[in-house]
Image 1 (tube, helix red, strand yellow):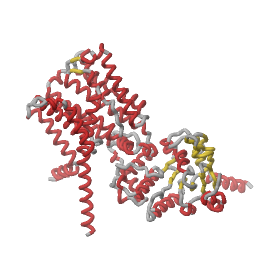
Image 2 (cartoon, helix red, strand yellow):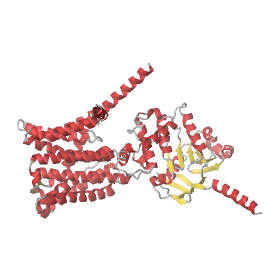
Image 3 (spheres, helix red, strand yellow):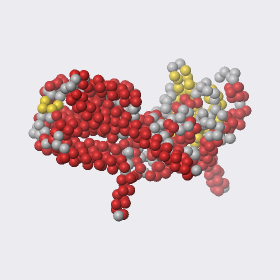
Length: 339
Length: 269
């Protein structure tokens, strides 16, 4: 009985964690009860983009850094796995090498980018990251011996990833792991300083925090995670071309983060889900009417509407309402006590 | 004879220690375009001293503070802290050395709670700056310490409010709590009562008085209200058009004719 009481207590105190656990369990069991290949592929894509969007949220939502070059880390991950799998045997060992190479390259690049550009004011930083991502795009186009240029190349993946259900579960587990890592990271003493920087950089400095160090830390963690998203993206397609370095990828991440709610992490996952579902739905509707082929128009409209009416995004708006409700409740309680 | 010598030496030592210079500026100047905002200001502030800076609007008081705290780099001159040249140190490093400051325009973290604003200062003071493995709540003592500072500035009933929702006077109190939480040796207070309602001013003054009475901090305060600072200050310096017009005890400053005419107008320095 006592144990059951403890369990209930945990659920009441950790309501959100309990909800996350239920959703995770549901998603883990889904492929075994609902056998739709298309749905499996779509959800896998959502998990991959959720990792990318969460990594972007660390920059935009938690540190207040606007980057237009996030695709470069995504692309590095995608090409690392592609090149390793193409040039060597598609074994688990080579997969691990590709992951290590991605972590190393994205960490070095994001460190240098951070060092070079984080001293700049926000809009200059945004422009510079855009230019750097453009540089990687040109490099991927021109270094044909390695990347096969715009045409890209197909590759095989290790056996464990061939089965779509396996791949689905691996992507889901990776997404959950990234979510938990980032949750801890943003709630650590260092993570709290990142939020202080977002709020007021000058004040953070005057409290004795070396702002540049924190921005670089956020940039490196974010870059590495975007690289990992790139690995899984390329593996889901078993194909990679220069499109992984394009601005569209960064804009997708930006849109997902803003629609879901910046600075919330879970918002990035919801944003990724909504955008990918909408994308899929609009592609289906394109069979009915040609206008739906131009899905980017609809995304543009959604983006404008969200920025105007829900600047805090879905999760941000919900949190605001919950916070207001709690405040009202506590005010009422105080009144009752006084009365 | 030996005892007398020993006595004299000890008196000299005690006297010497109490007058150890903590902050010193040597011909400190800064020019923006053609305008010299601070012009060759040389001062010396002893340890555990309470110095006030007065002067009319545009006299260069806040600019002088920005130079001391590292927000601005001087065009000329040097700043010494405990005899060490800190002119080239960033504001972050100066805070870590022991120079904390509050701002004239309220400068807090608007979308963080009141408690979190102060907790961040406590965390910095404790040197827990790069810890990323543990949850910040693990350091419960930081929150408790932050609460103590908030109690001191009479803001403990607002701990869960977002700083953005505070009234102006409350923001000034929060600013003060953040500065105190850093526990720096030097406190640079830039008009701590500016824009406050008349009811709020005594509370802040009381806090400043209490810090002074503790006797372990050096305080440099910018204030417009002369009557407010005269009782508190060990010395007062007057800035006018970026230049040091006078520096002395409150009584000397009150009697100083140049200062009087500067405040009443008509002085050309």
